[in-house]
Amino acid sequence: MKNLQGLIIALGLGVAAALVNWAYLHSASSRLATIDYIGVRPGQTVLRGERLAEEKLVRVPIPAGNAGSLDTFAVKWSDIQTVLGKAVARTLVGGSLLLEDDLRTPPTELELKKPQPGGNEEEVAIFVPVDMRAFVPSLVQPGDRVSFLLGSGGGPTPAGAPAPAAGRDETIGPFVVLALGNRLSSDDVAKAATAPTAQQNVLTIRVRLVGGRFEEKAQRLLKAIDRTNRGLGVMLHPRE
Image (cartoon, helix red, strand yellow):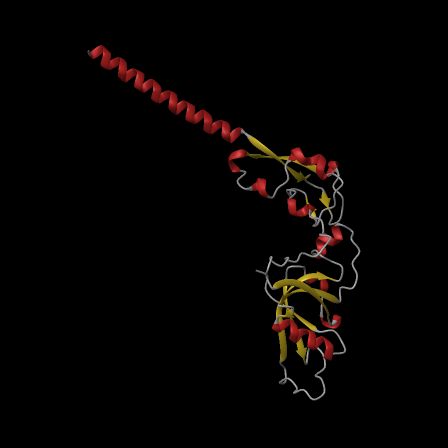
C-alpha cells in the first residue's frame, strides 16, 4: 500500500515538474519569437515627400510578447515590396519605425453623408472666402472645426448695421472644414503626394440642409458673405 502511495506521489511530482517545464519553455519561446517591422536604417533620413528606397530601410525585429498593438499602425517587413517607391508624409530619421500613417494618400472627393430614405435632412458643402492677411492655410486641415469672424476683424460692418463693440468680433460657427481650396488632406500629406494646391483662400465647410433650408448658422454665414467685400477672418477651435 505504501509502495502504491509512493508511486502516486512520484507520478504527481513528475507531472507537476513536466507542467512547470512546459510553462517555462512556452514562456521562453514566446520571448524568443519576433515580429519584423520596417524601420529607417540608422544614420539615414527620409525627407517628407521622398520616396522610400530599400537601401534606407532596415528590418526591425520586435519580441512577439512586446509587440502589443504595433500591428495596428506599424508596417511589417513582409510588406516591404508594397511600400517601396511610395512617398512619406513626414520626415523619418534613423531608428524610426515606418507607420501606416506615413504612407497616407490624399482623398480625391469630399465626404458628405447622404440623406436617409424618407428623411428631410442632408449634408451639403458651401464655400467661404477667407482673409489671407490673417490666415495660415498650412495650420488648418480637413476635419478641423473653425468659426468665422465678422466685424472689426473679419470684414467691414455694412451700412446701417450697428458696429460691434470695440475690440470684439461676432463669430459664426463652428463648422467642420472639408477642404482648403483643392486640398482635401493635411498639408503634409498633400506635399508628400506632390499634389498641387490652389485657391487655399477658400474654405469648403460642411453644413446641414433641413427641409430644403440651411441651418440657422449657415444662413447667418451666407448673409455675412453677401454683405462683405473681402474674405472673412477665421478662428480655429481645438482639435478633439
